View 1 (tube, helix red, strand yellow):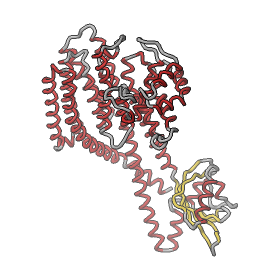
View 2 (view 1 turned 45 degrees about the vertical axis):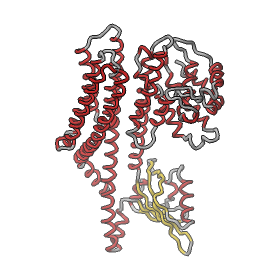
View 3 (view 1 turned 90 degrees about the vertical axis):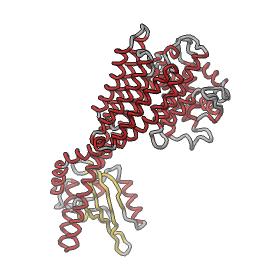
View 4 (view 1 turned 90 degrees about the horizontal axis):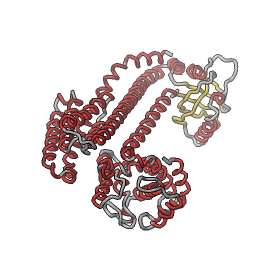
Length: 566
């Protein structure tokens, strides 16, 4: 009890100090991430000159000057970043670079006419990169989002005049812009909260461990001094110590153990240790301890649960030693440490990770929904593609040669990343994307560019992540989901197994959904008709093995189609 009270007072007194330490850690993290952001901006910003040349050749020289100016500003700020001022005010330096690049893109938007310029996507990309790389707080993310939105809104309204049809496009652009700001602010808030929880847990565990080590060392010294000191240690050690005989009856225990189970040591009857072990844990505990002692092995760090007389469940970590005489087991000495608080911290941390995972999935769905919001005829398309891809991938895993490659993680990743296949359509003009009639050859060339736009965008994000992530599959799918097994697809005319497996899977699910969904230019076909069309393209449009896997689970496709029918 004395130790517990001392710990509580120490923890409360260190709160303000821990807050200062957290802010210092956050500033150091921000400073390091800012260095990365500047280099990413300096390298990627001029790369879009290729897009300038292709999309707006007549304005290429002006755009070249804007981008050079933006890069020059980043270089200057990169130098300032290493000064004392930069270390004290990293957010101010970050905003300066962010606004400089935003001004450059804003001038491009104005030069292109403003209201209907699709270059506003560059400002959204800048916002996403800024909020994704830097550890922003809620307020910082909100400031960044509002600043970039004003850089888009004000110049367009002041320096350009709208044509009648461009007002709708401008309204659509504003809608997407505000949506991205909302997503970025929510993400930054949750990330900051998760960093704070992680810091608190580390701080508390370190504090607890430090004082525990000091207490054990102090009492161990008393043990060496005399047998009387040993008794004092036994009576007052923070852990619970209990000795039981071979039948499980408690022979002796220290006060901490009796306090844990809710009784006193001055009882007039024998206590059986198994009576206090949680009924679900007792079989495993009994087997584990008997097996260890039979093999002359001490028990170390074994975790199970106790239930005291009040019905309270207590998580403990056990270290146990067998007591023998002439090779006969007389009993056991158990040292039990209450880890209930630690278990709660672990549960809270897992809950935070689970929350972040859900936020990530929701954010990805929000990004993918951009194209669906522009084309209302594709309602429910993303949800169906996700489920089709998961079912098809699971069935494909049963085929020889795929068992080891298609793991549970692969199935989860393709379920999450499949919805990014058409993300590049945000860069396609509405006049082409939403055209109700047949596309001209020139327009079809424009629509084909969505594969490259989407793949390049996901590749830029994926390159900032160490190792392989779900975005690796998303990048493959975005680039290659219109390639054909026969080599007659686009954009590169890849053939056979040159096409990534993920793209071959989504290619079939995308075509199935397109066939069975109604569009302004066609009616939906039946499930059976879609199956016949896909089977006829076995070895042509589609990988033969994937068509076979589709045949095995086609009924599941039909069920999903009806369940998610828009």
